[in-house]
Image 1: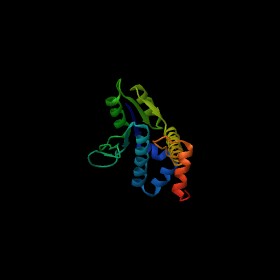
Image 2: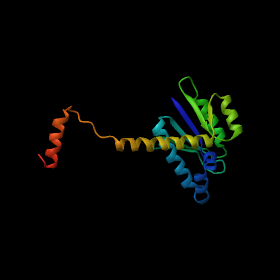
Image 3: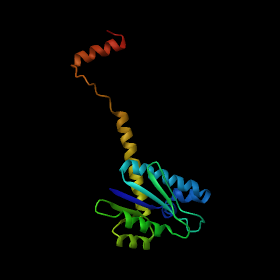
Image 4: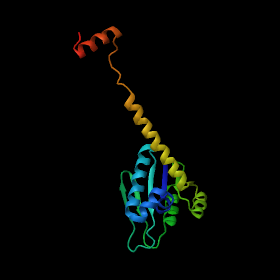
Length: 169
């Protein structure tokens, strides 16, 4: 199974839409990232874990699941990088390919050493935009497809039925 671990605040800072949103409301930026990752997860079927750094927040760590996305707030004095490294170590095996979305160069080098692959925040954004476009195109295709009849009829019979339907026959 493919697993995507997202460095939440790193991605928020790298995506223009989320960076602007965080200037007004950090919680809204987090929620929007989680929403986008839920759509990403639904489209690709990858397991998605979003990690937010709670290094400067007092209290215990928290973990919850929403829309099939796992969200982790690190424990006090634990960085998101430390949490991500621990997750990669636990997740990486012959059955799982782990990807980490971060633009933090030091973190990228560390996760490479643990066998994970990296996706930079801009690459993740481009991948998300491509998915959005594919979804839109798929919707448009489905709008234009006429339903097929389960019963195959000759053209002259179909024409007669159409006349009856219109009240002409």
